[in-house]
Amino acid sequence: MATLNLKAFPDGLYRKLRARAKKERRSMAQEITHILAQAVETQKPLSILELRGLGKEHWKGVDAAAHVRGERDSWD
Image (cartoon, rainbow, N blue to C red; front, side, top):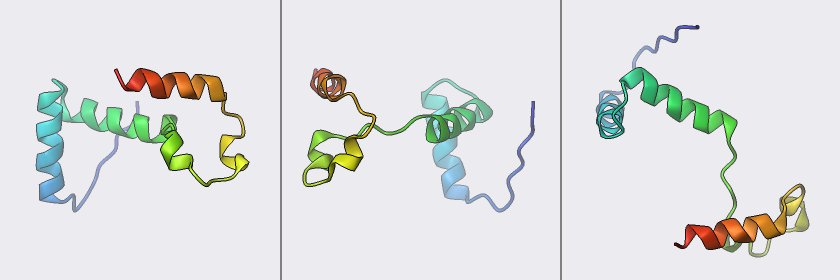
C-alpha cells in the first residue's frame, strides 16, 4: 500500500479533520482516505433544481426515472 506525506498542511484544516475523524470513529488516515475516495470515485448527483435551465447534455447517461426516485427518497 502506498504512503502519502503532506507538507505545510494548514493547522486549522488538520484540527477540523481530526474532529471529523473522531466524530466518525475513524483514525485520521482512515478519514482522509475516505474523503479522498469519495472525491475521486463518485460523482455528486445533480439535483433537479440545479439542472433548471441546463441543456440535455447534463442528462446524457442519466436514468431520469432513477434520478427522480433518488430525489424523492432524499426527502424522507
